[in-house]
Length: 149
Length: 149
DNA sequence: TTGATAATGATAATGATTATCAATGATAGC
DNA sequence: GCTATCATTGATAATCATTATCATTATCAA
Ligand SMILES: [Zn+2]
Ligand SMILES: [Zn+2]
Ligand SMILES: [Zn+2]
Ligand SMILES: [Zn+2]
Image 1 (cartoon, rainbow over the protein chains, first blue to last red):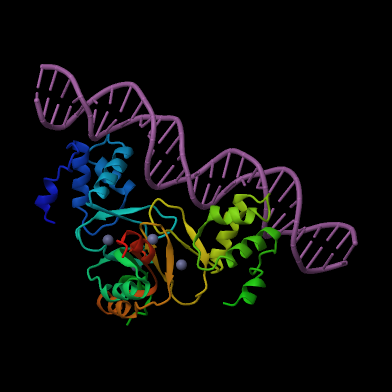
Image 2 (spheres, rainbow over the protein chains, first blue to last red; image 1 turned 120 degrees about the vertical axis):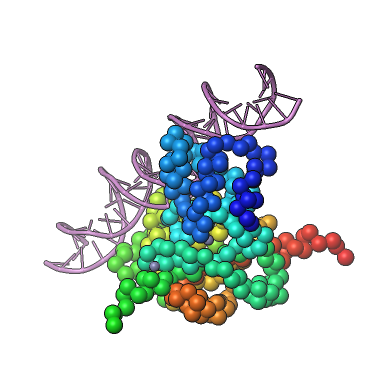
């Protein structure tokens, strides 16, 4: 999905408002970042001091329904995160969640085809989408605890 | 983990109360079932009309911390589910979530070793646990919509 | 320009989970 | 068994992210 396509998105039956456009702008400018609703709200507020958080929640929901935003919660008890859904059509991408610094990074490869085929064969379960999170320690955090030398 | 081991579990520094035992009994009697806190509460209530839901939440939390219960939320906006954690020590098992009837079933095989090795090699990410949910249509639901013949 | 109606902002409501607290119960030591 | 100690309980208030409500405002097709 190219920038130009997102830009002209008038969201099929939704009006084009200043607030909605600002929210889209923030999300487009934060590719690969997983933001909470409040974080998005704070970014948008820099451009529109008067925007209400309910407006952010409302538009996030619309964007999610339209397949533009991906919503995920990486740890129980934390708030939901959103990111630009750049691989629409295919399966949801996987995430690497660092348990030390909290960083969440995306993984391009899917690699679940074999397992899904097996699930279909042995369980008769027809998979349409999936969710795979890896929890562990990221490269940077590993370096920090390694002895220098 | 054998029944006998669970039975004598006095939870390392926790007192053995009637309520706690009843909650454990319910969970042990529902192997392979993914229950919400309220469902557990309702089952326990049959044996103790006076138990409070706060007690159920408190004990669920303790059991989770002790590695006896596994907590998971299979769809955003739904309430958390709990199940007996029978494969303690190894990685969390995968789930097949039917989007039509809501049934959640477990998967014995892990099969993520190759992907985790690749994640370690290419990203330098050291995986300690993971979460894999497959969303789709279960065998029973597929039969229902198939033409008879 | 105007009318229909969608969107906004402020705020109240929701609902699952936690915290509080006085009363009760479990258990170790006597 | 009795008692003192301290965890646990039940009732209920609090929390907090998210939604609903509603009067006001903005968008846009005609
Ligand atoms: Zn890290
Ligand atoms: Zn992502
Ligand atoms: Zn089904
Ligand atoms: Zn399970």
